[in-house]
Length: 623
Image 1: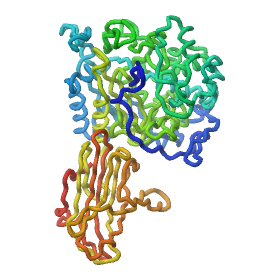
Image 2: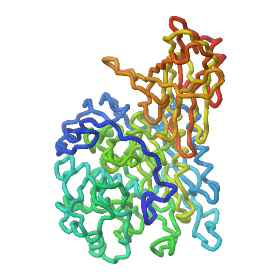
Image 3: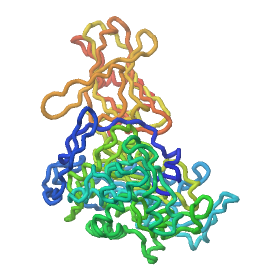
Image 4: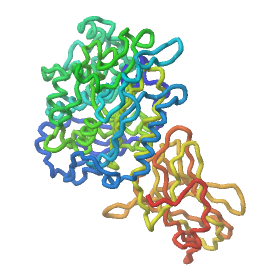
């Protein structure tokens, strides 16, 4: 089983629940156009783009690449050098360590390697727990049988992990390379490359649908039960889609297995050779490969005591070989699973993509191609945003790092990778969470906790002055920021402030409310303007007096008409409310001012007025 699938799709704890909106469409590489909110996909002229895109190219995929000139390679450094705050990084480690203990019934993982950075600086690289702890699983007592202490192996910075479904990203990158070179077409049918694939009514499935999990394939089938490669392929050829291609999102290993077969057909090279020649060797990722040699075993994290009935195969302790049964059946080389790697190598890959496809002197993709990885092709399926191979905007494991352009993936063995082009940050959490058995792990709590802390480590500077009011990032909470009672006499009374917000879409929100004469709180409609270069943008109305979701992580200017409360003793408050699951980066309010015609009756920059603000859950923050 790979990614976070367990025979019939993601486990319930890992199922994305949010319904975030897709990002605005724009033309990318001549191939993607916005037409009425839907994607129109035309042939993408990327062949030769890599050769044309030099270090000075202006296209980019995020904050770290906008100029095209800043393309760092990795080095270790302090949080300050990375432009991060140290305390949240320290808390990131503490939070991850809590899952080494029962959480709540069993450890989430025996150990993990944590790596976090921004720009070219790796500010955190920390091993915790054990790479090898258990020799077996005792199903009668639901306990792990530990190796003697002298045979247990501690995690190390260079511990190698079975990445499980993070392997899908490598297959996707290899496919995008072939699209860029003009050998593979995104909108071509799979059957045009593999005629036998058309069996079972699959003749209309396209390459794009494989890459975005919209082909209609069910999550997996037990290919490993067929002893021969021919038998496995026959199962795939005969498989009937569970839904009409393009009509639904359904995560499936079969998509990337099919993509592997296309790549091997087009290139005449097996997938492991393609990986080495096209990605890992050019980038110097020397600890990334399929089927690691026996000499690596002491540096590899063990996975599961694989036995029936929880595993599909009787293998005993899996250590140094691929965990996934279907990948094992394919000899360890499969499009959906089988890649082994370490945290630093994955950081190199992350930096390459955040650089726009280049690392040092090696370019593996053009900037136009990389942009497709960070672009949502699944606008028809809100909550299941997806680039080519990469998942986007998934709070269920990206936590507060999730933005419409945050890309990543998870692996069933306990691994995850998140890239945020908006802040130029990257987070790698490699854990052995199926050691000693897959049933001990539940949900993605360590992934979310660590991502929340890395998001918090990115400072938000006040719009004006030294501090701003910060809502915090607590889940299942309500925080209020209340102004003192003000009497307004003008028909031109208004509130002005600076506002910054990033919340889990629809589930968490920030509300502006008013109460006059002790009456119940009611919403106050307002408008926001996002400053930008050139002409002044039009104000965005918020008639319900609230905001939720993504605001671009920049300050907005807010105005609210308060004339409806003329002659009343009015109290205003901000209310920030979160549900019990996931959170965004939170909300900030700064430069609060209430004008009553020509008078300023409240100004948060005046010490006396600032001292009259009532804060419950909100704090003054310099970052």
